[in-house]
Length: 253
Picture 1 (spheres, rainbow, N blue to C red):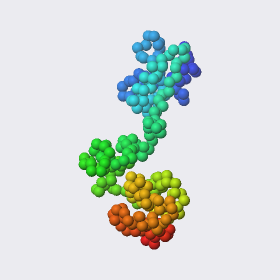
Picture 2 (cartoon, rainbow, N blue to C red; picture 1 turned 60 degrees about the vertical axis):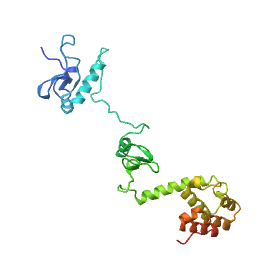
Picture 3 (tube, one colour; picture 1 turned 90 degrees about the vertical axis):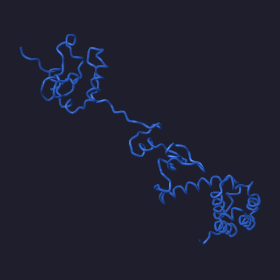
Picture 4 (cartoon, one colour; picture 1 turned 180 degrees about the vertical axis):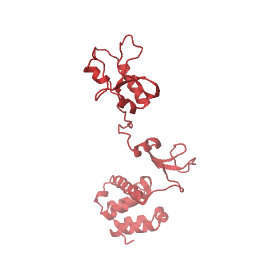
């Protein structure tokens, strides 16, 4: 009797389409039994997962296990075999914000964490003035800012400064008179606020100075700047800024 041709025989036999094997039925030396069972009911072999022999030879053990497990889990509820992809779709790890974890920047950020205040890298606690450190003072993503650390580059210094100036400028704009000042005098206010912060530099702490500013009394404002404990502390800085307030001119140096 002649062997049947076409249909499944073409796939399970040898040829351009054939030579399929059951990766769920391994043999010795990394080989597999041919695909197909004589009888699904009488066969001792479990539900097969068939792939071309060439594909089976390049599959890893974990890929084979995954493919067989998914095929048998799908079963055969209908008259036709359930088609299950040989290679499972890889799951892409995502960050909490939904972005793909596909670069070293995100990878290190995930492991180190992102901190916006100085912290002790030994215990992760924020560092405040006077605190005793266990490890190193660190900020951002694991940036060691201790004296024996890498510090920061000039480019990073400029980046931080520009952002800090923008923040301080925003605070200064809360004072109604600020927008009406010249660029030079705005710079003086920003510099003083940058140096002292809102807790030390405000209308309550400097009433005569702010009154002089509102009255456009530049000489009076300049005098108040020099006649202060702040001036005695920063010295040349106060002298330079007071001159700018008085003359409305940028300093030569």
